[in-house]
Length: 259
Image 1 (cartoon, rainbow, N blue to C red):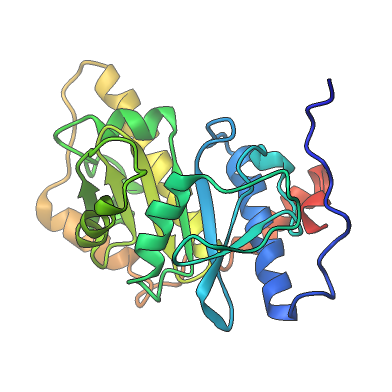
Image 2 (image 1 turned 180 degrees about the vertical axis):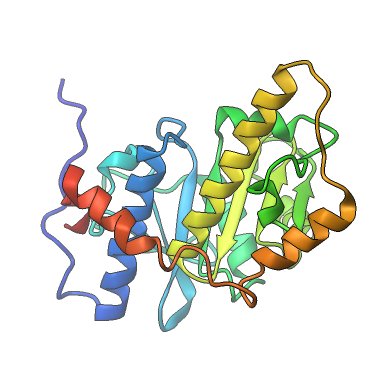
């Protein structure tokens, strides 16, 4: 039996606004990049992006497709209440946990144009540690504020939305205890950059702690100095400069995400 995903009837380009199409292409690229950098969990997890000019609508992956199969035309448009607005392929719906988590954040964080949630080995490992993310590396000091959310079971209950909103607050990254990682950004490139750096910081922390040796943790004032140096108002908005290079990397491998 052929179980490969069916290709949508045709690309949506020309049938949606130019702004929405650009967002679709960037979001599909983000899915491919998360896959390329090893941050996937089979068909689980989700990345969403708000549709420009449509404040209550966002795009999310079809539940059942791998990240490296996602294309601009295959993404599903839903509203904040989880109603499907546009589904190019009737064979696929949405993951309820994706709706619960992402709608909770999109509805209260208009600055969160993109939200990325992962279940990586390193991310899940750090999510189980009472110490949380430690400032062991320069990369880890990228995040002056890391939010934490206690595990309440699989995120399928709407009742969890309030605690998700409260715990995230105005942070750009959150560690979901016993669960995984989450990053938000004012753009897709910036959200990808944040989840990449958070994942890298978690990997190094797990490796360092596994050495069973005394750790060198910078003094609080040094960490605070590094936090300030990382601030986009001091340097730059991370992800914007990197994005064209990320797209070139994808294009060399497979540019079908643009379809």
